[in-house]
Image (cartoon, rainbow, N blue to C red; front, side, top):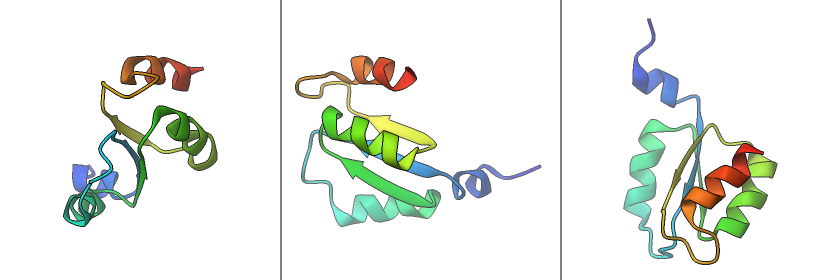
Length: 78
């Protein structure tokens, strides 16, 4: 049996947000739970980051410019 917090602490998070004003406090909260937090502000950058970093967990806005979050998820599956 492994507590969820212990499991999450071994994972890398890719946070994709169209908002460029994510605060350091928000980032620190994610860092409590995840081993590493990587932030991207566009789907295009997220695709590049995904192939370089291979995150375990992705949290994304649905309403991203140029490529929405649903389409981004589909591209990441391939």
